[in-house]
Amino acid sequence: MSLEGIDVSKYQSTTPPLVTRSFLFARATYSTWPDPMYATHIANARAAGLIVGAYHFGTAAYVPSQVAAFLGAAGTVDLYVLDLESNGGQPSMTQAQARAFIAAVQKTGRKIGLYHSESGFPSLWQDYNWVANWSQVPAVHWTFWQYRGSPLDLDRFNGDIAALRALAGKAPPIVPHVSIKGDFGLYAVVNGIVTDARVANTGGFSARCTVPHRYPWPGHTSQTLVKLLDGPVNVKGKYVRATWMVP
Image 1 (spheres, rainbow, N blue to C red):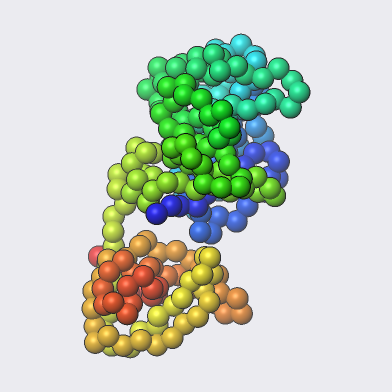
Image 2: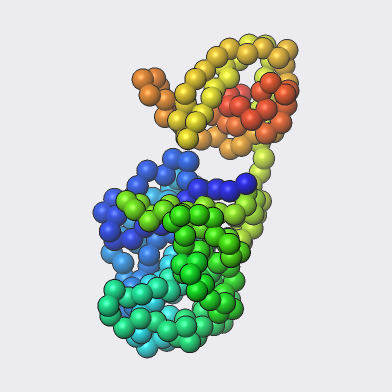
């Protein structure tokens, strides 16, 4: 199982739609300069209930100054990452500098991942890998995978929401239940959009479900739905209205 997310920076002047996303990484700093859109992106992602991460684009500048700038700009977030790549013709961060950056962040008690292309992906004692490969699933072990770079960076997490929350140091999500009797609406959701609804009848049941999420429905009122995680075989994996949830 994998979860969808995005990564953004000042080049996104507004935060992209977050429906169907589970996490967002925002650039906090480039070298020693803060990213002007960082706070906006993080605030919007938090408001949408996403796991949020900050990343630093490393350069050849003095490493302690870069670490101080990054941690100061990033503040308290769920995840931290060093972006190690070519600096567009300017002096780039070396692997030795990257190792020093990672060690300095870890010394503060924070875990930090490393972003790099799969080609030549280094081991610098990072806590997890964020691998870029825009053509195929990476062969190296990945925790996050950037699988598209344009027009918006798209990413996947290698696990379920409980694993993502565990990496972020958060408690496992509380799994709510639904309780239904008689006729009810059964919804189909494809790529985060409601595509169909029909009446189903099971004679009543209770089941574990996901947390409520509002899904767009072209031509109709959007619906706040939960996905059924168990229950009768003909409804497991389908969606129902969140109003049927019970404590």
